[in-house]
Length: 184
Image (cartoon, rainbow, N blue to C red; front, side, top):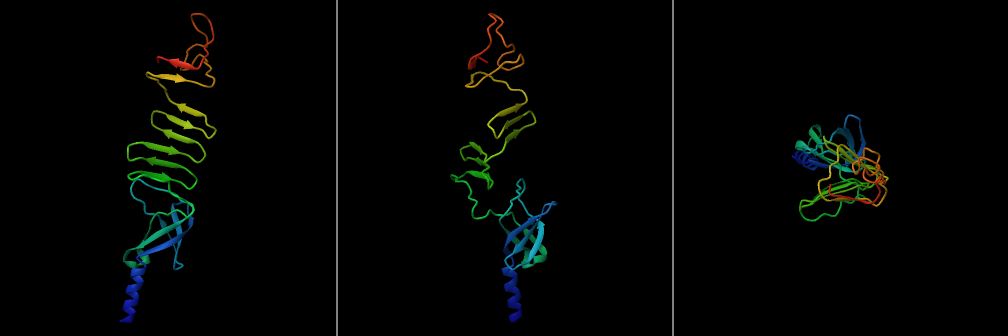
């Protein structure tokens, strides 16, 4: 009878286990080591539409029926030195340990921040690329409808530019210089 209680206690204790991340394989499997020293390997179980590849951290191992023969590895949690961003009630965020952040605000706003590196927004129609050096590249057609464009740097027409089709004014031959284009 005591043996049955020991087996039941072990199954209950093994339903959920915390494990330390050991390594990730090229096929997507993780190797983790449980608190009891058992090393197991399997792909992480993610909800539909979400995936991540953490480099360090802890994971939860769910063992169906308390049996390590039928286990699932839940996504890695961040180490203690990685702090999630501050959110207001109703906000949702994706973040990395090196400062990459996307926040969907409850009021409908979206905030994108990068720690370093290039930032790219890609659609089937074009791409906006903000380079790490601060330069912005637009790939695709850019149309300005109404409003104005103001430039505090140099805008040099090359005969093909969006601000001016010609480097010189057709009326008086002067070069097209200045910092503002309006009435587009």
